[in-house]
Image (cartoon, rainbow, N blue to C red; front, side):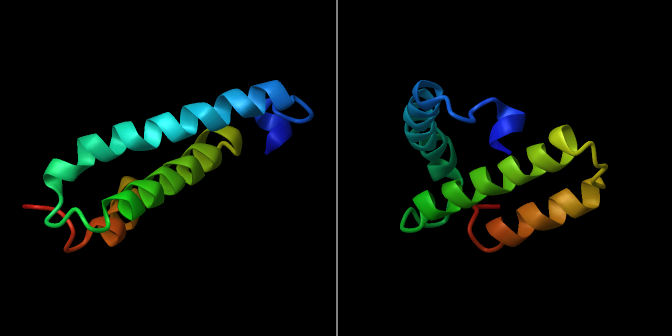
Length: 86
């Protein structure tokens, strides 16, 4: 995966990505919080959503796989079930 993303052996790029990831988690948290029933587990939900999106991107873009919309929705629903305001 590092080679696909061009990180293999590039410590400077890894540091930039780490800094960006820390910033983006907080940004996503602020976007998601108003839609959650409780804010207690907001950071866990955001991190889990980010991991899911990373896996989807890897599968679709890097590995050139097709994922049906229903499968993607099912995974998102599993993470967000009973957590969001409807």
